[in-house]
Amino acid sequence: MSKMELLQGTLDVMVLQTLATMGALHGYGIARRIEQVSGNQVLLNQGTIYAALVRLQQRGWIAAKWGVSENNRKAKFYSITKAGTKQLAADAAYWRQLSDVMGRVLAPAEEGE
Amino acid sequence: MRRLWERMAAVVRGRALDRKLDEEMAAHVEMATADFQARGMSEKDAPRAALAALGGLVVTRETHRDARGLPFMETLLQDIRYGLRTLRRDAGLATFAVLITGLGVGASATVFSVVHAILLRELPMADGDRLVWISNSGSDGLSGRTTQTAYLRDMQGKLATIGDAAGHFAFYGIGDLKMTGAGEPERLTGVPVTGNFFPLLGVTLQMGSGFTEAETQPKGPDAVIVSYDFWERRMHRDPGAVGRTLILNETPSRVAGVLPKSFDFGAMFAPGVHVDVFPAFAMSEQTNRWGNTMSIVGRLKPGATAVEAGAEMKVFAQQLAKLYPGQNEFKPEVRLLREYVSGSVRTAILVLSGAVAAGAADAGGESAVVGVGGWVGAGAGGGRDAGVGGA
Image 1: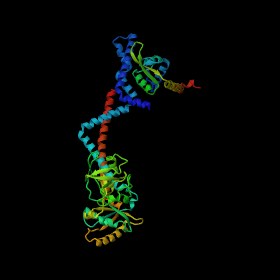
Image 2: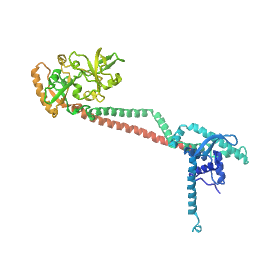
Image 3: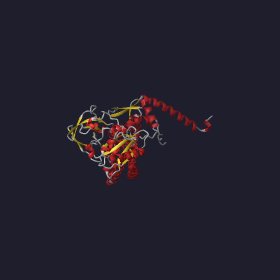
Image 4: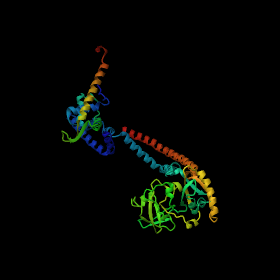
């Protein structure tokens, strides 16, 4: 099975969700985590993570701080903010509803009624 | 709002942010390399795989820039730079465009200031519509428009249509008064006026009560009324200016008043002339012997018209001529001052302003063509740059 391209807007939610469950993480850690959770099904161009991170930071949904990684390397650590948590709740509800609707619309006819 | 600010700041601090990102990506690649090695990749292949997973450093940097900055602002900056390069390349054309635009703007501004002063602005005086210009058509030239002082003195208070008349000495010279004694010496322009000149015009002095009786008499003490501009420029808006002494042509002269800002002698009587001070002018046997020197302004009595005043003045002048057979001729003409100020030049000024407006539009059009050319070129340049970035 070929890997999935990410839909517009989904990466931001994935990043927020990752930070919400894992706490502070560096960019590479976030990328790896998303790949793992998706069962390596998404085609993640890891570099796009950094564009998403700066976007989220500008919106005030995540904060960044320089720190030291597990193998003693200087790295930038990101964590979710209060506003980010709120945004994540809204986005998660939206995506759940959307996937629910898509699931029902695309369901085979015999399964309906 | 905050986001916009951050994004604009990001455009300006682009290089520093790039360096930060490079550092971050270096950490990323290092960690990814270590991971790939842990999963059994060779020391040689692991860094390559790490970079591939990242999607390449250059592309990452570009997407990061787009996200953090204002892409349109960055391309705008590029366009402006490209436009400037184009202008420098065609320096001759650029100079021409700048000059022609400058000339257009300059000419329009000049003509508008004249149009404003002469056609649009109301006379800045109380009841300006009742002021008349009493000129003398006795002979040719400027002295033909002016009148001997004796006629002025005699017409004051003796006419049914004109309440009072005043005058200014028409043969003042630009920069004829030398001011010394207080700070930088300066050549001033002074227009001598009769004692009742400003009261007749309906100009209320901003400060001071004007010339004293003695100051308007022959051989009386010297006094001047100063313009607002002069008071501001040379007297530093001194609230105690009235009563101070100016040394003009080595003679002390008392400051008898300060004119209001709204009064502009040049705009009414001598377009383009900047007057600093108005010395008191005495009507005497001596000044009468100087010949035709007075420009006369009168104020119509309520209900009287300029035409009626002209008719009465004609009869009056004939009576005076019999009385003083040796005097210069006085053939009075009476016109509303406002018509005198704008009338003779009205058509000429309208034509001139039309011509200048057309010229300015032309200049604007031409430089616009140059500008659009540069802009289109800049757009193409931006496209090329983008092509390189995307490749």
